[in-house]
Amino acid sequence: MDLPFNIGLIRTKETEVGNFVADAMRFVSAADVAIVNAGSIRGSLSKGKVTRGELLNMCPFGNIVERTESDGATLRKALENSVAHYPQPVGSLAQVSGLEFTFDPALPPGKRVLEVKVGGKPLDDKRIYILTATDFMLAGGDGYTMLKSLPITGVFGTMDEVLAKYLSQKTPEKTELNRIKMTEATASRR
Image (cartoon, rainbow, N blue to C red; front, top):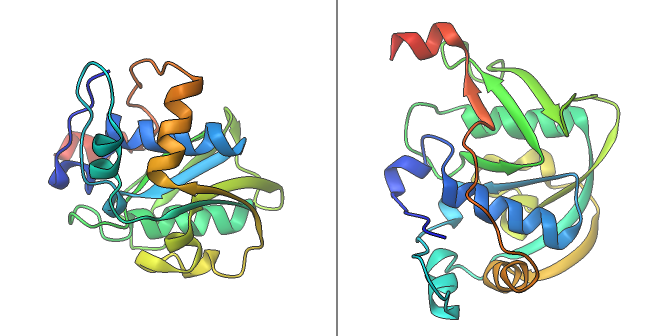
C-alpha cells in the first residue's frame, strides 16, 4: 500500500492517508464513526513492509485513540468545526471513516455542512453513535470543544499502536476518496 503525504493537501481535503488512519481507528475500536484531525497526521507509507518507525513518522505526537458516545447533533457540530476555515489549510480539517458528508464553503462557518450519512443512512441528530477520535480532539483541541464533555468508553493505545494493530489484523485496500464532498455549485467555481 502506497500512501503519499502532503501537509498542504491533507489540511484542505480528504486524502488516502487520512482515510487509512481514520479506517484503522474505527476498525480497532469497533466504532460507527472515526474522525481524526489532519494536523495529527505527518507522514506517508510506502509500498512493502511497514516499519514501526514509519508509523511513528506518520503519527508522531503520541495521541491516544479513544472511543466515546456522541449524539448526531454533536457529531454534526464537529464536522462544522472541521470545515469552518476552508479553504485555508488547517490542522482541524477532519479525515473520516464510517461517514460521508457534503459541505458548501460559500456558506458561513457553522452552517456549511449540508448532508451527513453514517453507514449510508442520514445522520439522526438524536441518535447516539459510537465515535472514535484522539484524546487531543476529545479534550477540545483544534476547536473540537463540542467533544469535551463526551464520556470515554474505551482506550486503544497511541495512534501508531492502533495503526500497527490494524495492519496486523487486516490488509487494507486502496481507500476511495468520496467521503467529503463539496456542493456542485462550489466545486464548479474552483
